[in-house]
Amino acid sequence: LRWGKRIKDQFDSLDKHTQWGIDFLERYAKFVKERIEIEQNYAKQLRNLVKKYCPKRSSKDEEPSYKFTSCIAFFNILNELNDYAGQREVVAEEMAHRVYGELMRYAHDLKTERKMHLQEGRKAQQYLDMCWKQMDNSKKKFERECREAEKAQQSYERLDNDTNATKADVEKAKQQLNLRTHMADENKNEYAAQLQNFNGEQHKHFYVVIPQIYKQLQEMDERRTLKLSECYRGFADSERKVIPIISKCLEGMILAAKSVDERRDSQMVVDSFKSGFEPPGDFPFEDYSQHIYRTISDGTISASKQESGKVDAKTTVGKAKGKLWLFGKKPKPQSPPLTPTSLFTSSTPNGSQFLTFSIEPVHYCMNEIKTGKPRIPSFRSLKRGWSVKMGPALEDFSHLPPEQRRKKLQQRIDELNRELQKESDQKDALNKMKDVYEKNPQMGDPGSLQPKLAETMNNIDRLRMEIHKNEAWLSEVEGKTGGRGDRRHSSDINHLVTQGRESPEGSYTDDANQEVRGPPQQHGHHGEFDDEFEDDDPLPAIGHCKAIYPFDGHNEGTLAMKEGEVLYIIEEDKGDGWTRARRQNGEEGYVPTSYIDVTLEKNSKGS
Image 1 (cartoon, rainbow, N blue to C red):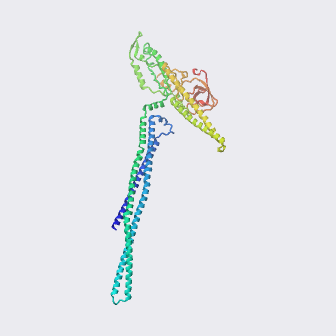
Image 2: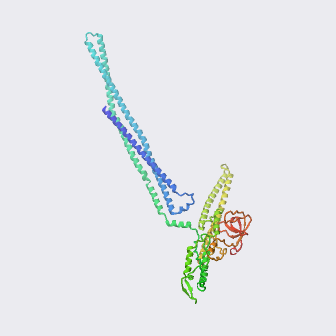
């Protein structure tokens, strides 16, 4: 019994140990599951990060920045980071399939196997207990029958020795003794059989059944330990397999960093924001002292001033007229500049010159430079700029500098060509479908495609017209840019620059005879200030036009006209879609070029 109790205690211990092994297996599986969730969340966050900082192709304002090598390198790094996130997902999938899934399946099988072994052990123990109870019952019954037989024998002997007992009582006691003795013998045989059977089952139980069950539980626990070892290895292999690809991703990031070219980016910035405008020229020196000191010496300083002023004034004015000024108004030289000869030389009565220094003119000029006010742009220039801003939408980008305008027009032409290609492909597809419908009427009605074909053809015609119009504008811009470069080259050689005149968008014309007006004489400071607000002299008419459509002319700087009205043209369209015209009553303004029929006079440029 003590041995059986010890065996039972050991069986319960093995029950607890195997349960602990399965719990540990499930705990490791939970650890792997949480690691998988971390990898998945990490990969998801990396992908969201890449998506957040990836360029949005819909944003046209940021598209030029994609050309910079620094931006391209950053986008390559984002792509490599996206691949890196994909490898983290691969790690998570590998762990989920090879480690976590295998652990969960094995834990389920392990529980089933453990339950079966424990049930077998409990059944063997129950069968042994049953055999022991049967043997114990037969033993107790045999013991009880033996005591009854002893009592029957004692009763028989007492009656047999009693002289007063009758013969019948003696015979009855003898029969009772024989019956008890027989039953005791039968119980003895039963007890011997049950004892033999129990001993056999007990031997089998402790030397065959239980050792076999324990061995099976031991093998199960060893397999569990081996499975944990395999899962540990698979856990590490899942990470090790992606290391080469992750290394390539990191190498790609390093290559992207090395591909950054600061000089190329700087040159792209220069090319992108190059306007094509000429830099403004030098401001001429305006001498206000010639009228004050003209009467000091008629034969010395004044004569030298006049001689030098004739040459310098022409050169200064010629250089100033060829430049495009910031506010559209060219500074008007008022008098010959003060030359070093007029300041530092003097003449003797006999005609010889000697070096001297006139302090008062220099002091006066310095005061004028310190107290001088900046030139104020004329109303005509402001009016032209305002009319462009408040007028119709400038689809030809005439409000931009020439170089920027050329780039915008080229970009629009490329987009229109792509749209035209799409429409052409759609037209070809519709024609093929129409042919199929005509050959196989059961597939569809060819007439149902006619509206779509007509719409596609209209779109193609519209796109071709738009492309032609934008190409015309582009040719005009490129022609102006080339002409302006030729003029700049010619001015550098001959030191003579033609006088330009602004158009509404700030461009200029090379017509030198349209604004040939001499500089007005200045008498003090008020003349200069008032001249800035004076309107220019009326320009000569270079042709006439007839209004095809009516124009309201609500915006400032524009001229209203009625259909069929005849106007004088005083300035041609410079590519911005506006022509400057004048009524017979002298009212001037800008009208849309597409609203009028223009007729230029012959030799209008020289009139």
